[in-house]
Image (tube, rainbow, N blue to C red; front, top):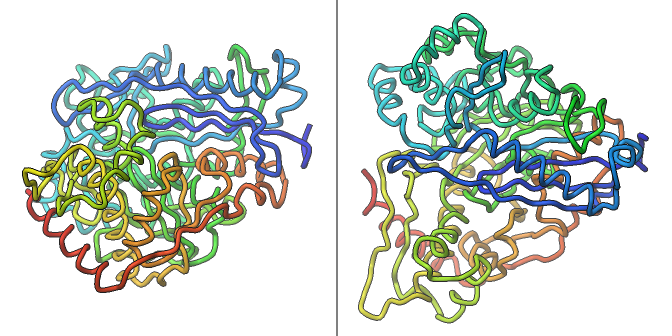
Length: 502
């Protein structure tokens, strides 16, 4: 079944969990499934996933969503679901054996800092300017290129096997496509390829993996996936329990680009911020490639039809993960949702600031060696003040990203569109509006990352106008306070950040 009566299965494989949605063409959720993903921390600053956990969680979430949509059995799924859309945590790096499909190492997660010295050595050798000019990125452990170089140097025989064409590299989207198609398709899309440091994206019409960049990261072309359009053909399902053979995969995008598309931000200046494990602000610039001079990234996103376009992006590494830290490591709260009530128990953070540089600082600082701190403590500071300081940190980090985009020539947005699980926290959204001085608009559906993957699949099916109902604004948070108060708050935040810089 195709057209406006069709449903799509959208799979969002994130850092801490996988979510699957069964969506109709209006964006209504017909079924939802979720699974958590175990994290591995073999050394301080190192973060890994077991690749089979990524696959298993995604598949389990998909089966749960299909069941909750009332689809009973493979024939029922084949009758009702027209396509799959995928979105994924970006930059996380996997390498596996082409013949057996077995990974040669755990997935190295985007948050992992193990390659900080590799990146520093490349900067000392004078490669930063060229890399930034060609890729729009910076030499930071965040991206895939240095992770691959680490694998070639540290996994026995990996470099030799890669050169011989025995191994396959992919970000998480590529791994899931490989698994869904029974190893028949090894492909990615431009939004994920543009996050590898191997992909020259300075001219969209000629964007491609580049030989000079491959040489820089000692990566043979033989391991690379094919790059296909985000709203395009990524093969069909083959041999996956619970899914019908022949079900097409028609949409793939990195999570932040999918969220931008899901928010309908496809006109120049449209801006969204996603609140998940990290925080990711994107300003759509369309065909114009804006080179940042203030610590942002230039990245490939999707235009209104799912084709390639540009955006400025700021990446904060720790946002919602700081709330998880309060819950899991300190036991300050029992559930992540409890942070709002605890933070509301005090009027403010008592002059303290929490800087969540657990894995270094992302944009606009790009300081891999920075480490976190709660600064400005006095004897009266308690649990409520810590919770409030954590929420404040998310808002001030996002304020710095928006300021950088404006300094790079982006227009000041009329409002900030937001998505992600933390947007359910009304206190955080109000703090964010107060810090920015512009309204914060929360849509009817905050799972816009999965929505974006589904809408890309609908676009490939030729269904126009899909998802508009889900994109409507459900609530606006209007800023309070004066500009002078905001600027004093920003200055105090920056002073706290300076305390933890390397």
